[in-house]
Amino acid sequence: MTSTRSTGPAAPCSPIEKIMTLSPSEFAYSIGAFAGEDAAAAARRGEPVVLATGSGSVAITFTKIDGFMFGGLVEMPRARVVITMDGLTQSEQAAFLRRFDLSFQRGGG
Image 1 (spheres, rainbow, N blue to C red):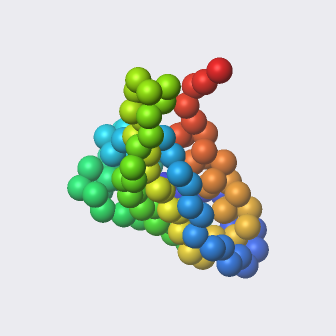
Image 2 (spheres, rainbow, N blue to C red):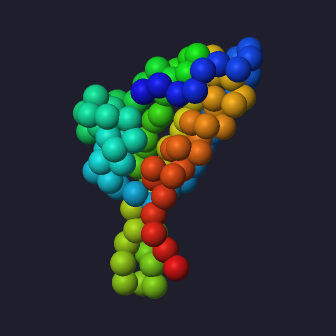
């Protein structure tokens, strides 16, 4: 996966944690659409997804956590997804997160 060219020095970035409503299979499918079959295969094996992008790399980990009951009728799966960026400029970080969020966006009311 490649991104825009580097536009400055790498910026420090703390890991970004997202609590997401998705199952392991949904994560593997979406990460495959986002970053390709190698990423999907790593996700299906339960491994971190590591991507070379821009001037650095990004590691994405998926951890299943307890789901929740919606209206007492439907159990919704949940996961903790942690994105760790290394060596990316601020503009590369922002572009990566925009693309990630769009790729994992779900429809809604």
